[in-house]
Image 1: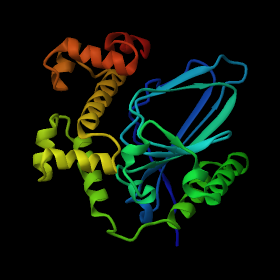
Image 2 (image 1 turned 30 degrees about the horizontal axis):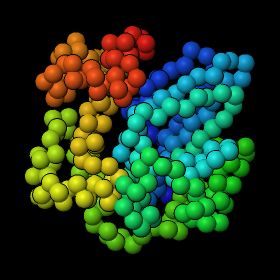
Image 3 (image 1 turned 90 degrees about the vertical axis):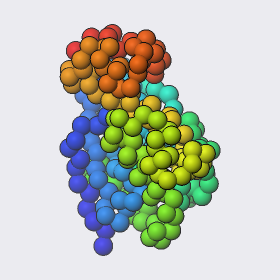
Image 4 (image 1 turned 180 degrees about the vertical axis):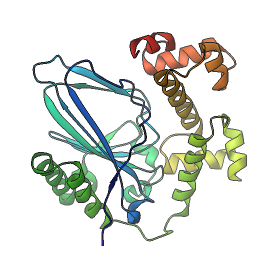
Length: 275
Protein backbone atom coordinates (compact mmCIF):
# COMPACT_ATOMS: atom_id res chain seq x y z
CA UNK A 1 0.00 0.00 0.00
CA UNK A 2 1.32 3.44 -0.94
CA UNK A 3 1.26 5.99 1.87
CA UNK A 4 -0.28 9.40 1.33
CA UNK A 5 1.72 12.58 1.03
CA UNK A 6 1.39 15.47 3.46
CA UNK A 7 2.01 19.18 3.20
CA UNK A 8 5.33 20.57 4.46
CA UNK A 9 4.79 23.83 6.32
CA UNK A 10 8.34 24.90 7.17
CA UNK A 11 9.71 27.86 5.23
CA UNK A 12 11.80 26.86 2.20
CA UNK A 13 15.33 28.19 1.93
CA UNK A 14 17.03 29.50 -1.16
CA UNK A 15 14.16 31.44 -2.74
CA UNK A 16 15.64 34.88 -3.40
CA UNK A 17 12.37 36.61 -4.36
CA UNK A 18 10.05 35.86 -1.42
CA UNK A 19 7.05 37.71 -2.88
CA UNK A 20 5.88 39.37 -6.10
CA UNK A 21 4.30 42.82 -6.41
CA UNK A 22 1.85 41.65 -9.10
CA UNK A 23 0.34 38.42 -10.39
CA UNK A 24 -0.22 35.24 -8.41
CA UNK A 25 2.34 32.66 -7.36
CA UNK A 26 1.69 29.36 -5.60
CA UNK A 27 4.33 27.17 -4.00
CA UNK A 28 3.63 23.87 -2.26
CA UNK A 29 5.82 21.07 -0.92
CA UNK A 30 4.72 17.52 -0.13
CA UNK A 31 6.55 14.89 1.90
CA UNK A 32 7.07 11.48 0.26
CA UNK A 33 5.57 8.25 1.56
CA UNK A 34 7.65 6.29 4.07
CA UNK A 35 8.83 3.81 1.43
CA UNK A 36 10.55 6.61 -0.50
CA UNK A 37 11.88 8.68 2.39
CA UNK A 38 15.40 7.35 1.81
CA UNK A 39 15.43 8.62 -1.78
CA UNK A 40 13.18 11.69 -1.88
CA UNK A 41 13.40 14.82 0.24
CA UNK A 42 10.07 16.18 -0.97
CA UNK A 43 7.89 16.91 -3.99
CA UNK A 44 7.33 20.52 -4.95
CA UNK A 45 4.90 22.44 -7.10
CA UNK A 46 4.93 26.03 -8.32
CA UNK A 47 2.15 27.63 -10.32
CA UNK A 48 1.86 31.19 -11.57
CA UNK A 49 -0.55 33.45 -13.38
CA UNK A 50 0.85 36.69 -14.77
CA UNK A 51 -1.89 37.38 -17.31
CA UNK A 52 -2.25 41.14 -17.75
CA UNK A 53 0.90 41.71 -15.69
CA UNK A 54 4.53 42.18 -16.55
CA UNK A 55 6.60 38.99 -16.36
CA UNK A 56 8.28 38.45 -12.99
CA UNK A 57 11.74 37.00 -12.47
CA UNK A 58 12.18 34.33 -9.82
CA UNK A 59 15.63 33.43 -8.57
CA UNK A 60 16.82 30.68 -6.27
CA UNK A 61 20.03 29.42 -4.72
CA UNK A 62 19.76 25.69 -5.41
CA UNK A 63 20.61 23.09 -2.78
CA UNK A 64 22.97 20.11 -3.30
CA UNK A 65 20.13 18.01 -4.71
CA UNK A 66 19.13 16.43 -8.00
CA UNK A 67 15.63 17.35 -9.23
CA UNK A 68 13.28 15.63 -11.63
CA UNK A 69 11.15 18.42 -13.10
CA UNK A 70 8.09 18.38 -15.36
CA UNK A 71 6.66 21.55 -16.89
CA UNK A 72 4.01 22.08 -19.53
CA UNK A 73 6.56 22.16 -22.34
CA UNK A 74 9.67 20.36 -21.11
CA UNK A 75 10.92 17.81 -18.62
CA UNK A 76 14.17 16.43 -17.35
CA UNK A 77 16.43 15.42 -14.53
CA UNK A 78 18.54 18.36 -13.42
CA UNK A 79 21.87 17.76 -11.75
CA UNK A 80 23.03 20.02 -8.95
CA UNK A 81 22.89 23.61 -10.23
CA UNK A 82 25.99 25.36 -8.97
CA UNK A 83 25.04 28.95 -9.83
CA UNK A 84 22.00 31.10 -9.13
CA UNK A 85 18.95 29.74 -10.95
CA UNK A 86 16.79 32.30 -12.75
CA UNK A 87 13.43 31.80 -14.44
CA UNK A 88 11.17 34.42 -16.03
CA UNK A 89 7.54 33.73 -15.12
CA UNK A 90 5.21 34.93 -17.86
CA UNK A 91 1.60 34.10 -18.70
CA UNK A 92 0.29 31.06 -16.88
CA UNK A 93 2.31 27.96 -16.11
CA UNK A 94 3.45 25.37 -13.61
CA UNK A 95 6.36 23.15 -12.67
CA UNK A 96 6.29 19.96 -10.63
CA UNK A 97 9.47 18.54 -9.17
CA UNK A 98 10.91 15.66 -7.22
CA UNK A 99 13.73 16.82 -4.98
CA UNK A 100 15.94 13.82 -4.29
CA UNK A 101 17.92 13.53 -1.08
CA UNK A 102 21.66 14.00 -1.48
CA UNK A 103 22.81 10.59 -2.63
CA UNK A 104 19.24 9.55 -3.41
CA UNK A 105 19.50 9.73 -7.19
CA UNK A 106 22.77 7.77 -7.44
CA UNK A 107 21.05 4.32 -7.35
CA UNK A 108 18.73 5.39 -10.17
CA UNK A 109 21.46 6.99 -12.29
CA UNK A 110 23.97 4.18 -11.84
CA UNK A 111 27.01 6.43 -12.12
CA UNK A 112 28.64 9.46 -10.50
CA UNK A 113 26.11 12.24 -9.92
CA UNK A 114 28.83 14.82 -10.60
CA UNK A 115 28.55 13.79 -14.26
CA UNK A 116 25.20 15.59 -14.61
CA UNK A 117 26.00 18.71 -12.55
CA UNK A 118 24.64 21.85 -14.25
CA UNK A 119 22.95 19.67 -16.89
CA UNK A 120 19.43 18.63 -17.86
CA UNK A 121 18.83 15.08 -19.04
CA UNK A 122 15.46 14.35 -20.69
CA UNK A 123 13.31 11.80 -18.88
CA UNK A 124 13.07 9.63 -21.98
CA UNK A 125 16.85 9.44 -22.14
CA UNK A 126 17.04 8.03 -18.61
CA UNK A 127 13.77 6.14 -18.28
CA UNK A 128 12.55 5.52 -21.84
CA UNK A 129 8.84 5.41 -22.57
CA UNK A 130 8.01 5.25 -18.86
CA UNK A 131 9.63 8.65 -18.38
CA UNK A 132 7.44 10.10 -21.12
CA UNK A 133 4.38 8.49 -19.54
CA UNK A 134 5.14 10.07 -16.16
CA UNK A 135 5.40 13.48 -17.83
CA UNK A 136 2.06 12.89 -19.57
CA UNK A 137 0.37 11.93 -16.30
CA UNK A 138 1.72 14.96 -14.43
CA UNK A 139 0.62 17.34 -17.19
CA UNK A 140 -2.86 15.78 -17.15
CA UNK A 141 -3.01 16.36 -13.39
CA UNK A 142 -2.20 20.03 -13.93
CA UNK A 143 -5.50 20.31 -15.80
CA UNK A 144 -7.73 17.93 -13.87
CA UNK A 145 -6.53 17.76 -10.28
CA UNK A 146 -3.42 19.23 -8.69
CA UNK A 147 -0.13 18.74 -6.83
CA UNK A 148 -1.26 15.79 -4.69
CA UNK A 149 -2.27 13.80 -7.76
CA UNK A 150 1.05 14.71 -9.39
CA UNK A 151 2.91 13.43 -6.33
CA UNK A 152 0.86 10.23 -6.35
CA UNK A 153 1.84 9.56 -9.97
CA UNK A 154 5.48 10.24 -9.12
CA UNK A 155 5.35 7.84 -6.20
CA UNK A 156 4.05 4.98 -8.33
CA UNK A 157 6.84 5.68 -10.82
CA UNK A 158 9.56 5.74 -8.14
CA UNK A 159 8.31 2.74 -6.16
CA UNK A 160 8.68 0.62 -9.28
CA UNK A 161 12.38 1.57 -9.28
CA UNK A 162 13.01 1.43 -5.55
CA UNK A 163 16.40 -0.18 -4.87
CA UNK A 164 16.63 -2.89 -2.21
CA UNK A 165 16.94 -1.68 1.36
CA UNK A 166 20.56 -0.98 2.30
CA UNK A 167 21.59 -1.63 -1.31
CA UNK A 168 24.04 1.27 -1.18
CA UNK A 169 25.17 2.29 2.29
CA UNK A 170 27.37 5.02 0.82
CA UNK A 171 24.29 6.89 -0.41
CA UNK A 172 22.98 7.10 3.14
CA UNK A 173 26.41 8.12 4.39
CA UNK A 174 26.53 10.99 1.89
CA UNK A 175 23.03 12.13 2.87
CA UNK A 176 23.97 12.12 6.55
CA UNK A 177 27.09 14.22 5.94
CA UNK A 178 25.16 16.83 3.93
CA UNK A 179 22.54 16.93 6.70
CA UNK A 180 25.30 17.50 9.24
CA UNK A 181 26.57 20.48 7.26
CA UNK A 182 23.08 21.95 6.97
CA UNK A 183 22.39 21.53 10.69
CA UNK A 184 25.65 23.00 11.99
CA UNK A 185 26.50 26.55 10.85
CA UNK A 186 29.79 26.24 12.73
CA UNK A 187 30.96 23.39 10.49
CA UNK A 188 33.03 25.40 8.05
CA UNK A 189 36.04 23.24 7.12
CA UNK A 190 36.30 20.17 4.91
CA UNK A 191 39.03 18.80 7.19
CA UNK A 192 36.66 18.89 10.16
CA UNK A 193 33.93 17.14 8.16
CA UNK A 194 36.39 14.43 7.07
CA UNK A 195 37.41 13.92 10.68
CA UNK A 196 33.78 13.57 11.74
CA UNK A 197 33.17 11.12 8.91
CA UNK A 198 36.19 9.06 9.87
CA UNK A 199 37.71 9.14 6.39
CA UNK A 200 40.49 11.12 4.75
CA UNK A 201 39.83 14.25 2.75
CA UNK A 202 40.37 12.63 -0.65
CA UNK A 203 37.92 9.83 0.14
CA UNK A 204 35.38 12.40 1.33
CA UNK A 205 35.69 14.29 -1.95
CA UNK A 206 35.23 11.08 -3.95
CA UNK A 207 32.13 10.23 -1.91
CA UNK A 208 30.58 13.62 -2.62
CA UNK A 209 31.41 13.51 -6.33
CA UNK A 210 29.82 10.07 -6.65
CA UNK A 211 26.70 10.62 -4.57
CA UNK A 212 26.05 14.34 -4.08
CA UNK A 213 27.30 15.75 -7.37
CA UNK A 214 29.48 18.54 -5.98
CA UNK A 215 32.37 18.68 -3.53
CA UNK A 216 32.04 19.11 0.26
CA UNK A 217 33.56 22.60 0.15
CA UNK A 218 30.82 23.72 -2.26
CA UNK A 219 28.13 22.31 0.05
CA UNK A 220 29.57 24.09 3.08
CA UNK A 221 29.74 27.41 1.24
CA UNK A 222 26.24 27.05 -0.21
CA UNK A 223 24.60 26.38 3.16
CA UNK A 224 26.54 29.27 4.64
CA UNK A 225 25.06 31.52 1.94
CA UNK A 226 21.57 30.09 2.55
CA UNK A 227 21.93 31.14 6.17
CA UNK A 228 22.96 34.66 5.16
CA UNK A 229 19.93 35.02 2.86
CA UNK A 230 17.57 33.61 5.50
CA UNK A 231 18.76 36.09 8.12
CA UNK A 232 18.45 39.01 5.71
CA UNK A 233 14.94 37.95 4.69
CA UNK A 234 13.82 37.48 8.29
CA UNK A 235 15.24 40.84 9.33
CA UNK A 236 17.28 39.14 12.06
CA UNK A 237 20.69 39.78 10.54
CA UNK A 238 23.01 41.99 12.59
CA UNK A 239 25.21 44.53 10.82
CA UNK A 240 27.10 43.07 7.90
CA UNK A 241 30.41 42.82 9.75
CA UNK A 242 28.81 40.70 12.48
CA UNK A 243 26.87 38.65 9.93
CA UNK A 244 30.06 37.88 8.02
CA UNK A 245 31.90 36.94 11.22
CA UNK A 246 29.06 34.72 12.41
CA UNK A 247 29.20 32.82 9.12
CA UNK A 248 32.91 32.20 9.44
CA UNK A 249 34.18 35.02 7.24
CA UNK A 250 37.02 36.85 8.92
CA UNK A 251 37.07 39.38 6.11
CA UNK A 252 33.81 41.28 5.53
CA UNK A 253 34.91 42.23 2.01
CA UNK A 254 35.33 38.54 1.15
CA UNK A 255 31.79 37.81 2.35
CA UNK A 256 30.37 40.70 0.31
CA UNK A 257 32.21 39.55 -2.83
CA UNK A 258 30.93 35.97 -2.51
CA UNK A 259 27.38 37.09 -1.72
CA UNK A 260 27.33 39.51 -4.67
CA UNK A 261 28.73 36.94 -7.09
CA UNK A 262 26.08 34.37 -6.13
CA UNK A 263 22.99 36.47 -5.35
CA UNK A 264 23.59 39.16 -7.95
CA UNK A 265 23.72 42.15 -5.62
CA UNK A 266 25.55 43.10 -2.40
CA UNK A 267 23.90 42.03 0.87
CA UNK A 268 22.92 45.56 1.84
CA UNK A 269 21.25 46.17 -1.51
CA UNK A 270 19.53 42.78 -1.34
CA UNK A 271 18.15 43.57 2.14
CA UNK A 272 16.68 46.84 0.84
CA UNK A 273 15.22 45.15 -2.26
CA UNK A 274 13.18 42.61 -0.26
CA UNK A 275 12.07 44.99 2.49
